[in-house]
Length: 124
Length: 151
Image 1 (cartoon, each protein chain N blue to C red):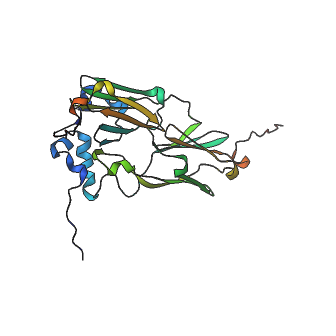
Image 2 (image 1 turned 90 degrees about the vertical axis):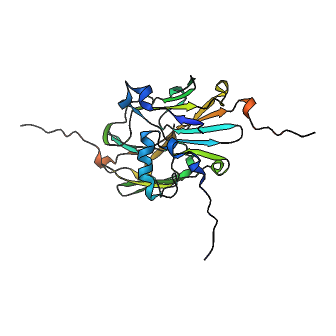
């Protein structure tokens, strides 16, 4: 049983594969659906692109192009954009996906379709 | 000696096949052999950049999803220390986790500054998950133009 499976990144980013980095992600499940949190430091609200298409959830994060404060003495951070694609389970309602970013942490909320939520049926 | 009932950790609810579906997972699983709980490693190392111009030294550290109070910045001579703790989210304990790649816990990084700075004028800001520490250079460390008279 799979619910949110990662798509082979190569299939979606062939041309720019080397220019992207895969953000670290936590996925948590509750009764209503799933919460996905992706780390995208350096990305603001305007740099985020969350797309749901053909049962795939695509996350893109672009950093603001900023002038560096002087010459680089030491560098570890990448300037590449963040990119990651997940296959969504059919039980997820693609019309009810919401997202927000706060301090470089992208949160995507995915809700299960009403019909598939667990329901308690009262026996009469 | 106590007897503790063995429980299957929640994060293994994914089948082995799913977990190995990507190359990243394959590498992760190889490196996690020594760690008992993925995501709870002993500390983590946030990536940082150091920049310098005539007036200042700037240090940028990637720390997504933290609060301003979670950091500690200190300066000892020419060594800047940025440390702090990212607290694990409480919601993780309820329900199930499918994927845990983010690291939590404490971190500490020491940066040897490329020049002397004014310790009392150090400023820091936290935006879009990046902590920026700006350290103005000490007067003595600034480049000076010296007029040499030629005879």
